[in-house]
Structures are given as structure tokens and as C-alpha cells.
Picture 1 (spheres, rainbow, N blue to C red):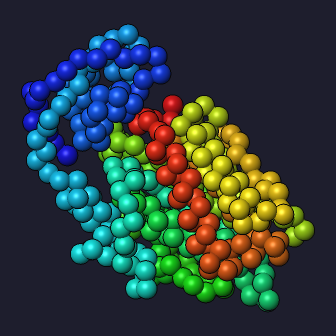
Picture 2 (picture 1 turned 180 degrees about the vertical axis):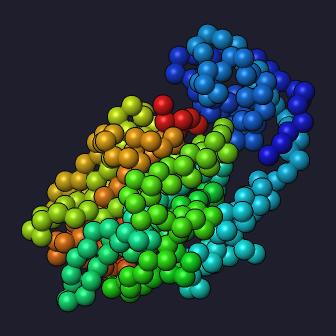
Length: 335
């Protein structure tokens, strides 16, 4: 998005706790329409490209001429992302490829979604009525459903691990295959270290490309523990990331509210905590949360992932937590 510089402007002094978005909102300016110009006008007084200094004076851009609409820009980016083709998203499959706009709550936000494992690595395995269950298939289905929810609220979404033909599926037993690829059709390596590094490199490159925008990363896994261990959905974040912690906490709070409403006789025990020893948590640049959906080997937890409506509910609840995070958030890097 480009602007004509040199437009009308006013001056304001930043107070303690002010961020770029909050400062612009206080002046009655839409922060997402003038963010790039604000950065250009005040670059010498902005730390790490995103932070303001208390007590310093900043120029506030007013009326701007936008030479390219946000809709047009998003369509171009999403076409490059291989998700958007003439108003449809083929990655979701024929049944779900049409995405109806619900709101613009996430306009100008960028999300990177990573489902665990994939390609030569199916992840955690289990049996259900004599049939094999693979973690990567269920994590991917929930991730696609989440992507669809976020797009319906105006977000730009990158699905980092993708399957060329699965789409969103409504079966209980999801067929196992190994044809998943990384973003831009990169073959997923067999070696675990190379596999994880590939994902980190893709995410960090996209993060640099989208610098200056509100960016978040959501990683989805299904855990594997002892058969008898029933666990709730829980969330990890980087120990030094305030934005990552806030994202994890926002989704966690949403789950607490949902359980209280829909399962009032059951205590929700899922937690959010720092877990910096995880490779993707430690090495990716965007603020992020790492989500464990449940124990694939436990019969009660299997219902959470086997029933399509439950997978949809999980995606919906996560999206509501993400919206809560965005509506109270600031643009910034993880550290």
C-alpha cells in the first residue's frame, strides 16, 4: 500500500504506554490506513521500527491519498500465496472453497499457520476401531478450518504446510497420505532437523517480507501420551515474547469461557506457558503460540479430533481468541 507523502499533519507527544496504534487511535486516525506513512515521517524517533519513546513528539498524518485499495492488494498477495483464485480458495476443497466475509475485524493482520509434521512424517499415531489415526491429518484439517475462519474476518493467511488435494474433510477417519509440501511447493525433508529448519526459514522470510504489519504465528499439534491420560487443549509461547504470551493467553481465556458455557459441570485444565526449548518456538521471528489439541491415544480426546463438528468448534474458538488478541494488540516482533 502506498501513500502520497507531504500531506497535512499534526504533532502529538507520546505518553507512557503509548504504542503506534494506540497513539493514532487517540488522534482519531485509522492506524491501518496511515501506519506506513507514520513510520516514514517519524523513523528517527521509532525504536526497532515499532516502538515509541515516551516524551518525544510525533507527526500525525491526516488525510492521505491511497493509490491502491487494500482489497486489490490482498488479492494480489493471496494469488501469490496460491490460495486465492477468482474469489475462491481451492486449498479448502470443493465443498468449502467459497469463503463468505463475516467481518473486517482482522483487516491488515497477517497469520502464518503451521500444522504439525506432514510429508514423510505422520507424527503421533493411534488406533481407532482397528484403523490408523495420524496426527498430521487432524492437525492439518483443524488448521484449514482455522485459516477459513481468519480469512472470513479479513486476515491475510499463509498456510505453511499444505496438501494439494485433501481440503477440509468431514470424515471421522481421515485417510493417511504423505504428499504434503511446504509453502510454495517445497518438498518436506525426511530428516527432522532439516524439516523444522525449512519451516522456520519459510516463516522468517515471509515475516521479513511483511515487515511493519501485525503478524502472528499459530502452530497446531496433536499430542501423544499414555492411553489413559486425558488432556485439555493447552498453549505454549516464547518466554521472552510479551506478544506471544498475550496471544496464548487470549486463546486460553476464550477456551475457558467456552468450556464454562458448554461444559459447566467440567473444569477446564488446559494451560498456557513458556516452552522455549521447542524448535519452532525458539527460532521463529513472529510472536506465536504453539497449540496442543489433545492426546491422540486417549479415547475421550479422540472424540475431540474425530468428530468434524468438534474440529470446527476448535478452529472457531481459536479464531475468536486470535481476534481478541488482535483487537488489543500492537504491531511488533517477538523480541
